[in-house]
Length: 457
Image (cartoon, rainbow, N blue to C red):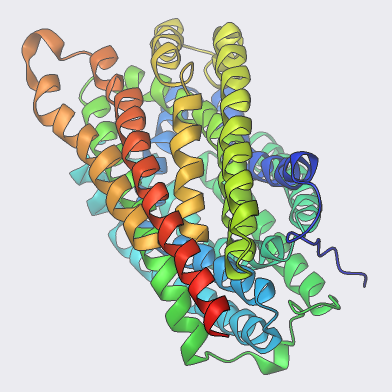
Protein backbone atom coordinates (compact mmCIF):
# COMPACT_ATOMS: atom_id res chain seq x y z
CA UNK A 1 0.00 0.00 0.00
CA UNK A 2 1.40 3.40 -0.93
CA UNK A 3 2.03 5.58 2.13
CA UNK A 4 0.70 9.10 2.16
CA UNK A 5 3.56 10.65 4.11
CA UNK A 6 4.22 14.26 3.17
CA UNK A 7 7.43 16.27 3.49
CA UNK A 8 6.76 18.84 6.22
CA UNK A 9 10.37 20.08 6.31
CA UNK A 10 10.62 21.64 2.87
CA UNK A 11 8.56 23.57 0.35
CA UNK A 12 5.76 26.10 0.56
CA UNK A 13 3.58 26.36 3.68
CA UNK A 14 0.64 28.55 2.68
CA UNK A 15 -1.43 25.96 0.81
CA UNK A 16 0.01 22.72 2.29
CA UNK A 17 -1.08 23.79 5.79
CA UNK A 18 -4.64 24.19 4.51
CA UNK A 19 -4.68 20.88 2.63
CA UNK A 20 -3.31 19.16 5.74
CA UNK A 21 -5.89 20.76 8.06
CA UNK A 22 -8.99 20.19 5.92
CA UNK A 23 -9.03 16.35 6.18
CA UNK A 24 -8.48 16.64 9.94
CA UNK A 25 -11.37 19.07 10.10
CA UNK A 26 -13.67 16.81 8.09
CA UNK A 27 -12.61 13.73 10.09
CA UNK A 28 -13.36 15.48 13.37
CA UNK A 29 -16.73 16.65 12.05
CA UNK A 30 -17.58 13.05 11.23
CA UNK A 31 -16.59 11.99 14.74
CA UNK A 32 -18.93 14.62 16.10
CA UNK A 33 -21.67 13.32 13.84
CA UNK A 34 -21.64 10.16 15.98
CA UNK A 35 -22.98 12.21 18.87
CA UNK A 36 -24.99 14.60 16.69
CA UNK A 37 -26.78 11.66 15.09
CA UNK A 38 -27.51 10.34 18.59
CA UNK A 39 -29.10 13.64 19.62
CA UNK A 40 -31.02 14.20 16.40
CA UNK A 41 -32.46 10.69 16.26
CA UNK A 42 -33.53 10.60 19.91
CA UNK A 43 -34.86 14.14 19.57
CA UNK A 44 -36.99 13.17 16.58
CA UNK A 45 -38.27 9.87 17.92
CA UNK A 46 -37.96 10.02 21.73
CA UNK A 47 -38.28 13.69 22.82
CA UNK A 48 -36.35 16.41 24.65
CA UNK A 49 -35.81 14.36 27.83
CA UNK A 50 -33.81 11.83 25.82
CA UNK A 51 -31.85 14.68 24.23
CA UNK A 52 -31.07 15.98 27.71
CA UNK A 53 -30.02 12.46 28.82
CA UNK A 54 -27.45 12.16 26.03
CA UNK A 55 -26.28 15.76 26.44
CA UNK A 56 -25.93 15.49 30.22
CA UNK A 57 -23.24 12.81 29.82
CA UNK A 58 -21.05 14.75 27.41
CA UNK A 59 -19.06 16.90 29.82
CA UNK A 60 -18.38 14.09 32.28
CA UNK A 61 -17.43 11.46 29.68
CA UNK A 62 -15.02 13.95 28.09
CA UNK A 63 -13.55 14.70 31.51
CA UNK A 64 -12.90 11.01 32.16
CA UNK A 65 -11.51 9.95 28.77
CA UNK A 66 -9.53 13.09 27.83
CA UNK A 67 -6.62 12.19 30.09
CA UNK A 68 -6.09 9.05 28.01
CA UNK A 69 -6.84 10.76 24.71
CA UNK A 70 -3.99 13.09 25.70
CA UNK A 71 -1.64 10.13 25.53
CA UNK A 72 -2.53 9.81 21.84
CA UNK A 73 -1.31 13.38 21.41
CA UNK A 74 1.94 12.33 23.08
CA UNK A 75 2.22 9.40 20.66
CA UNK A 76 1.70 11.71 17.69
CA UNK A 77 4.28 14.26 18.84
CA UNK A 78 6.79 11.48 19.55
CA UNK A 79 6.29 10.12 16.03
CA UNK A 80 6.63 13.63 14.54
CA UNK A 81 9.89 14.21 16.42
CA UNK A 82 11.19 10.81 15.28
CA UNK A 83 10.37 11.53 11.64
CA UNK A 84 11.81 15.04 11.85
CA UNK A 85 15.11 13.74 13.23
CA UNK A 86 15.05 10.71 10.87
CA UNK A 87 15.10 8.14 13.71
CA UNK A 88 13.25 5.15 12.25
CA UNK A 89 13.75 2.95 15.31
CA UNK A 90 12.19 5.60 17.55
CA UNK A 91 9.12 5.75 15.32
CA UNK A 92 8.86 1.94 15.24
CA UNK A 93 9.04 1.65 19.03
CA UNK A 94 6.53 4.47 19.52
CA UNK A 95 3.99 2.93 17.16
CA UNK A 96 4.25 -0.51 18.74
CA UNK A 97 4.06 0.92 22.27
CA UNK A 98 1.05 3.12 21.57
CA UNK A 99 -1.39 0.38 20.53
CA UNK A 100 -1.16 -1.77 23.70
CA UNK A 101 -1.17 1.41 25.78
CA UNK A 102 -4.46 2.40 24.16
CA UNK A 103 -5.97 -1.04 24.76
CA UNK A 104 -4.97 -1.16 28.43
CA UNK A 105 -6.28 2.37 28.98
CA UNK A 106 -9.58 1.46 27.33
CA UNK A 107 -10.12 -1.57 29.55
CA UNK A 108 -9.48 0.54 32.64
CA UNK A 109 -11.93 3.20 31.49
CA UNK A 110 -14.64 0.64 30.75
CA UNK A 111 -14.45 -0.71 34.30
CA UNK A 112 -14.42 2.79 35.78
CA UNK A 113 -17.21 4.22 33.63
CA UNK A 114 -19.62 1.32 34.04
CA UNK A 115 -19.05 1.16 37.80
CA UNK A 116 -19.27 4.83 38.74
CA UNK A 117 -21.58 6.41 36.12
CA UNK A 118 -24.64 6.54 38.39
CA UNK A 119 -22.84 8.19 41.29
CA UNK A 120 -21.12 10.72 39.05
CA UNK A 121 -24.34 11.80 37.35
CA UNK A 122 -26.09 12.17 40.71
CA UNK A 123 -23.21 14.27 42.02
CA UNK A 124 -23.66 16.59 39.02
CA UNK A 125 -27.28 17.24 40.05
CA UNK A 126 -28.63 15.64 36.90
CA UNK A 127 -32.44 16.16 36.93
CA UNK A 128 -34.35 13.12 38.21
CA UNK A 129 -36.39 12.74 35.03
CA UNK A 130 -33.16 12.66 32.99
CA UNK A 131 -30.99 10.49 35.28
CA UNK A 132 -32.12 6.93 34.37
CA UNK A 133 -31.65 7.41 30.62
CA UNK A 134 -28.38 9.32 31.10
CA UNK A 135 -26.98 6.48 33.21
CA UNK A 136 -27.98 3.86 30.64
CA UNK A 137 -26.38 5.82 27.78
CA UNK A 138 -23.17 6.46 29.72
CA UNK A 139 -22.68 2.84 30.80
CA UNK A 140 -23.15 1.47 27.29
CA UNK A 141 -20.88 4.17 25.85
CA UNK A 142 -18.03 3.15 28.16
CA UNK A 143 -18.35 -0.50 27.14
CA UNK A 144 -16.86 0.43 23.78
CA UNK A 145 -14.38 3.09 24.85
CA UNK A 146 -11.36 0.90 23.92
CA UNK A 147 -12.32 1.19 20.24
CA UNK A 148 -12.39 4.98 20.62
CA UNK A 149 -8.89 5.08 22.13
CA UNK A 150 -7.30 2.68 19.64
CA UNK A 151 -8.66 4.69 16.74
CA UNK A 152 -7.47 8.02 18.19
CA UNK A 153 -3.97 6.73 18.94
CA UNK A 154 -3.60 5.36 15.41
CA UNK A 155 -5.06 8.47 13.78
CA UNK A 156 -2.70 10.71 15.77
CA UNK A 157 0.35 8.76 14.59
CA UNK A 158 -0.54 8.56 10.91
CA UNK A 159 -1.30 12.29 10.93
CA UNK A 160 2.14 12.92 12.42
CA UNK A 161 3.51 11.21 9.30
CA UNK A 162 1.52 13.59 7.11
CA UNK A 163 -1.40 11.29 6.29
CA UNK A 164 -4.66 13.05 7.11
CA UNK A 165 -6.70 11.34 4.39
CA UNK A 166 -6.84 7.81 5.82
CA UNK A 167 -8.66 8.80 9.05
CA UNK A 168 -11.11 10.81 6.94
CA UNK A 169 -11.95 7.88 4.66
CA UNK A 170 -12.42 5.50 7.60
CA UNK A 171 -14.59 7.92 9.58
CA UNK A 172 -16.73 8.65 6.53
CA UNK A 173 -17.70 4.99 6.30
CA UNK A 174 -18.15 4.68 10.07
CA UNK A 175 -20.25 7.85 10.24
CA UNK A 176 -22.65 6.63 7.57
CA UNK A 177 -22.97 3.30 9.37
CA UNK A 178 -23.62 5.07 12.68
CA UNK A 179 -26.53 7.09 11.25
CA UNK A 180 -28.07 4.00 9.67
CA UNK A 181 -27.79 1.99 12.89
CA UNK A 182 -29.25 4.86 14.93
CA UNK A 183 -32.40 4.85 12.83
CA UNK A 184 -32.63 1.05 12.75
CA UNK A 185 -32.23 0.65 16.52
CA UNK A 186 -34.40 3.59 17.62
CA UNK A 187 -37.15 3.75 15.00
CA UNK A 188 -37.07 0.17 13.80
CA UNK A 189 -36.44 -1.63 17.10
CA UNK A 190 -38.13 0.84 19.45
CA UNK A 191 -35.00 1.47 21.50
CA UNK A 192 -34.15 4.79 23.17
CA UNK A 193 -30.74 6.16 24.19
CA UNK A 194 -29.45 2.59 24.47
CA UNK A 195 -29.99 2.17 20.73
CA UNK A 196 -27.86 5.16 19.76
CA UNK A 197 -25.17 4.13 22.26
CA UNK A 198 -24.88 0.66 20.72
CA UNK A 199 -24.78 2.21 17.24
CA UNK A 200 -21.85 4.37 18.30
CA UNK A 201 -19.95 1.41 19.76
CA UNK A 202 -20.38 -0.73 16.63
CA UNK A 203 -19.28 2.12 14.34
CA UNK A 204 -16.25 2.96 16.46
CA UNK A 205 -15.31 -0.71 16.62
CA UNK A 206 -15.22 -1.01 12.86
CA UNK A 207 -13.24 2.25 12.50
CA UNK A 208 -10.58 1.03 14.93
CA UNK A 209 -10.22 -2.30 13.10
CA UNK A 210 -9.97 -0.50 9.76
CA UNK A 211 -7.22 1.90 10.81
CA UNK A 212 -5.22 -0.93 12.40
CA UNK A 213 -5.41 -2.83 9.12
CA UNK A 214 -4.32 0.22 7.12
CA UNK A 215 -1.32 0.73 9.40
CA UNK A 216 -0.20 -2.86 8.79
CA UNK A 217 -0.13 -2.07 5.06
CA UNK A 218 1.92 1.13 5.23
CA UNK A 219 5.41 1.22 3.67
CA UNK A 220 6.94 4.05 5.72
CA UNK A 221 8.29 4.30 9.28
CA UNK A 222 4.74 4.13 10.72
CA UNK A 223 4.07 0.59 9.52
CA UNK A 224 2.48 -1.61 12.20
CA UNK A 225 3.47 -5.25 12.80
CA UNK A 226 0.82 -6.76 15.05
CA UNK A 227 3.14 -9.56 16.13
CA UNK A 228 5.69 -7.04 17.43
CA UNK A 229 3.47 -5.07 19.78
CA UNK A 230 5.43 -4.29 22.92
CA UNK A 231 5.58 -1.53 25.50
CA UNK A 232 9.04 0.02 25.16
CA UNK A 233 10.19 2.13 28.08
CA UNK A 234 11.72 5.14 26.27
CA UNK A 235 8.83 5.94 23.89
CA UNK A 236 6.32 5.26 26.67
CA UNK A 237 8.04 7.78 28.93
CA UNK A 238 8.11 10.39 26.14
CA UNK A 239 4.47 9.66 25.36
CA UNK A 240 3.65 10.17 29.04
CA UNK A 241 5.78 13.30 29.35
CA UNK A 242 3.97 15.00 26.48
CA UNK A 243 0.64 13.22 26.70
CA UNK A 244 -0.14 13.43 30.41
CA UNK A 245 0.01 17.26 30.48
CA UNK A 246 -2.07 17.32 27.29
CA UNK A 247 -4.56 14.94 28.87
CA UNK A 248 -4.68 16.84 32.15
CA UNK A 249 -5.20 20.05 30.21
CA UNK A 250 -8.13 18.54 28.29
CA UNK A 251 -9.52 16.95 31.43
CA UNK A 252 -9.33 20.19 33.39
CA UNK A 253 -10.93 21.92 30.43
CA UNK A 254 -13.72 19.37 30.69
CA UNK A 255 -13.77 19.75 34.48
CA UNK A 256 -14.67 23.41 34.11
CA UNK A 257 -17.41 22.34 31.70
CA UNK A 258 -18.66 19.85 34.30
CA UNK A 259 -18.93 22.72 36.80
CA UNK A 260 -20.78 24.76 34.19
CA UNK A 261 -23.00 21.78 33.34
CA UNK A 262 -23.86 21.45 37.02
CA UNK A 263 -24.79 25.14 37.07
CA UNK A 264 -26.93 24.64 33.95
CA UNK A 265 -28.63 21.66 35.59
CA UNK A 266 -29.90 23.98 38.31
CA UNK A 267 -32.10 25.72 35.71
CA UNK A 268 -34.07 22.52 34.97
CA UNK A 269 -34.55 19.94 32.20
CA UNK A 270 -35.55 22.46 29.50
CA UNK A 271 -32.34 24.43 30.04
CA UNK A 272 -30.33 21.20 29.98
CA UNK A 273 -31.95 20.22 26.68
CA UNK A 274 -31.25 23.60 25.03
CA UNK A 275 -27.68 23.65 26.25
CA UNK A 276 -27.08 20.05 25.18
CA UNK A 277 -27.98 20.96 21.61
CA UNK A 278 -25.74 24.06 21.66
CA UNK A 279 -22.86 22.09 23.17
CA UNK A 280 -23.03 19.69 20.26
CA UNK A 281 -23.07 22.54 17.75
CA UNK A 282 -20.16 24.17 19.57
CA UNK A 283 -18.34 20.91 19.05
CA UNK A 284 -18.39 21.50 15.30
CA UNK A 285 -16.93 24.98 15.78
CA UNK A 286 -14.30 23.47 18.07
CA UNK A 287 -13.07 20.83 15.62
CA UNK A 288 -12.81 23.37 12.82
CA UNK A 289 -10.52 25.47 14.98
CA UNK A 290 -8.75 22.46 16.48
CA UNK A 291 -7.75 21.20 13.03
CA UNK A 292 -5.26 24.08 12.91
CA UNK A 293 -4.12 23.17 16.42
CA UNK A 294 -3.33 19.64 15.22
CA UNK A 295 -1.68 21.00 12.09
CA UNK A 296 0.55 23.21 14.25
CA UNK A 297 1.43 20.30 16.57
CA UNK A 298 2.71 18.06 13.79
CA UNK A 299 4.30 20.65 11.51
CA UNK A 300 6.01 22.40 14.43
CA UNK A 301 6.94 19.00 15.90
CA UNK A 302 8.82 17.85 12.81
CA UNK A 303 10.42 21.21 12.04
CA UNK A 304 11.53 21.94 15.60
CA UNK A 305 13.08 18.45 15.82
CA UNK A 306 14.92 19.19 12.56
CA UNK A 307 16.07 22.62 13.80
CA UNK A 308 14.04 24.47 11.16
CA UNK A 309 12.93 27.36 13.36
CA UNK A 310 12.52 29.73 10.42
CA UNK A 311 9.68 27.47 9.30
CA UNK A 312 8.34 27.12 12.85
CA UNK A 313 7.79 30.88 12.94
CA UNK A 314 5.96 30.87 9.59
CA UNK A 315 3.87 27.84 10.53
CA UNK A 316 2.81 29.53 13.76
CA UNK A 317 1.71 32.76 12.12
CA UNK A 318 -0.19 31.05 9.32
CA UNK A 319 -2.01 28.61 11.62
CA UNK A 320 -3.19 31.46 13.88
CA UNK A 321 -4.36 33.43 10.83
CA UNK A 322 -6.25 30.46 9.40
CA UNK A 323 -7.88 29.76 12.78
CA UNK A 324 -9.12 33.35 13.01
CA UNK A 325 -10.57 33.29 9.48
CA UNK A 326 -12.25 29.91 10.03
CA UNK A 327 -13.56 30.99 13.44
CA UNK A 328 -15.17 34.17 12.13
CA UNK A 329 -16.85 32.35 9.24
CA UNK A 330 -18.07 29.56 11.53
CA UNK A 331 -19.28 31.85 14.31
CA UNK A 332 -21.20 34.21 12.05
CA UNK A 333 -22.66 31.40 9.94
CA UNK A 334 -23.88 29.32 12.88
CA UNK A 335 -25.49 32.33 14.54
CA UNK A 336 -27.30 33.33 11.36
CA UNK A 337 -28.84 29.85 11.21
CA UNK A 338 -29.03 29.24 14.98
CA UNK A 339 -32.74 28.51 15.20
CA UNK A 340 -32.91 26.08 12.25
CA UNK A 341 -29.81 24.28 13.52
CA UNK A 342 -31.21 23.90 17.02
CA UNK A 343 -34.51 22.70 15.57
CA UNK A 344 -32.67 19.67 14.21
CA UNK A 345 -32.11 18.54 17.79
CA UNK A 346 -35.18 19.86 19.60
CA UNK A 347 -38.67 19.42 18.16
CA UNK A 348 -40.94 19.71 21.19
CA UNK A 349 -39.77 22.80 23.13
CA UNK A 350 -39.60 26.33 21.74
CA UNK A 351 -38.28 27.52 25.10
CA UNK A 352 -35.29 25.15 24.87
CA UNK A 353 -34.51 26.48 21.38
CA UNK A 354 -34.65 30.10 22.61
CA UNK A 355 -32.26 29.25 25.43
CA UNK A 356 -29.88 27.75 22.87
CA UNK A 357 -30.05 30.79 20.58
CA UNK A 358 -29.10 33.08 23.47
CA UNK A 359 -26.11 30.93 24.38
CA UNK A 360 -24.80 30.73 20.81
CA UNK A 361 -24.58 34.53 20.56
CA UNK A 362 -22.19 34.56 23.52
CA UNK A 363 -20.11 31.40 23.05
CA UNK A 364 -20.13 30.62 19.31
CA UNK A 365 -20.03 34.04 17.64
CA UNK A 366 -16.60 34.95 19.12
CA UNK A 367 -15.21 31.43 18.70
CA UNK A 368 -12.21 32.68 16.71
CA UNK A 369 -10.81 33.78 20.08
CA UNK A 370 -10.74 30.16 21.17
CA UNK A 371 -9.04 29.20 17.90
CA UNK A 372 -6.20 31.65 18.51
CA UNK A 373 -5.36 30.30 21.95
CA UNK A 374 -5.84 26.69 20.85
CA UNK A 375 -3.33 27.05 18.01
CA UNK A 376 -0.71 28.51 20.35
CA UNK A 377 -1.32 25.55 22.66
CA UNK A 378 -0.51 23.27 19.71
CA UNK A 379 2.63 25.23 18.85
CA UNK A 380 3.96 24.93 22.40
CA UNK A 381 3.11 21.22 22.47
CA UNK A 382 4.86 20.65 19.14
CA UNK A 383 8.03 22.21 20.55
CA UNK A 384 7.83 19.87 23.54
CA UNK A 385 6.55 22.43 26.07
CA UNK A 386 3.46 20.39 26.89
CA UNK A 387 3.67 20.90 30.65
CA UNK A 388 3.92 24.69 30.32
CA UNK A 389 0.98 24.69 27.92
CA UNK A 390 -1.03 22.68 30.44
CA UNK A 391 -0.30 25.07 33.31
CA UNK A 392 -1.30 28.13 31.30
CA UNK A 393 -4.52 26.57 30.02
CA UNK A 394 -5.56 25.12 33.37
CA UNK A 395 -4.99 28.38 35.22
CA UNK A 396 -6.35 30.50 32.37
CA UNK A 397 -9.38 28.84 30.87
CA UNK A 398 -10.37 26.49 33.69
CA UNK A 399 -9.38 28.75 36.56
CA UNK A 400 -11.15 31.82 35.22
CA UNK A 401 -14.38 29.91 34.51
CA UNK A 402 -14.51 28.26 37.92
CA UNK A 403 -13.62 31.53 39.68
CA UNK A 404 -16.37 33.28 37.69
CA UNK A 405 -18.95 30.68 38.67
CA UNK A 406 -18.13 30.87 42.38
CA UNK A 407 -17.96 34.68 42.52
CA UNK A 408 -19.80 36.73 39.88
CA UNK A 409 -22.34 34.06 38.98
CA UNK A 410 -23.34 33.62 42.64
CA UNK A 411 -24.47 37.23 42.90
CA UNK A 412 -28.31 37.05 42.65
CA UNK A 413 -28.51 39.82 40.05
CA UNK A 414 -26.03 37.93 37.80
CA UNK A 415 -27.30 34.40 38.41
CA UNK A 416 -28.41 33.94 34.80
CA UNK A 417 -27.36 31.64 32.00
CA UNK A 418 -26.15 34.59 29.92
CA UNK A 419 -23.81 35.69 32.70
CA UNK A 420 -22.55 32.12 33.06
CA UNK A 421 -21.44 31.98 29.43
CA UNK A 422 -19.53 35.26 29.47
CA UNK A 423 -16.77 33.31 31.23
CA UNK A 424 -16.02 31.55 27.93
CA UNK A 425 -14.75 34.43 25.72
CA UNK A 426 -13.17 36.13 28.74
CA UNK A 427 -11.08 33.04 29.49
CA UNK A 428 -10.03 32.65 25.83
CA UNK A 429 -8.66 36.19 25.55
CA UNK A 430 -6.69 36.18 28.80
CA UNK A 431 -5.24 32.73 28.13
CA UNK A 432 -4.12 33.68 24.61
CA UNK A 433 -2.18 36.68 25.91
CA UNK A 434 -0.23 34.57 28.39
CA UNK A 435 0.35 31.80 25.84
CA UNK A 436 1.87 34.24 23.34
CA UNK A 437 4.34 35.43 25.97
CA UNK A 438 5.22 31.80 26.70
CA UNK A 439 5.66 31.07 22.99
CA UNK A 440 8.16 33.90 22.56
CA UNK A 441 10.22 32.62 25.50
CA UNK A 442 10.11 28.94 24.47
CA UNK A 443 10.85 29.72 20.82
CA UNK A 444 13.94 31.74 21.76
CA UNK A 445 15.24 28.99 24.07
CA UNK A 446 14.70 26.21 21.51
CA UNK A 447 16.27 28.20 18.70
CA UNK A 448 19.29 29.09 20.82
CA UNK A 449 19.74 25.46 21.91
CA UNK A 450 19.53 24.26 18.29
CA UNK A 451 22.17 26.78 17.14
CA UNK A 452 24.46 25.78 20.00
CA UNK A 453 24.11 22.12 19.05
CA UNK A 454 25.04 22.88 15.41
CA UNK A 455 28.14 24.81 16.52
CA UNK A 456 29.25 22.00 18.84
CA UNK A 457 28.80 19.40 16.09
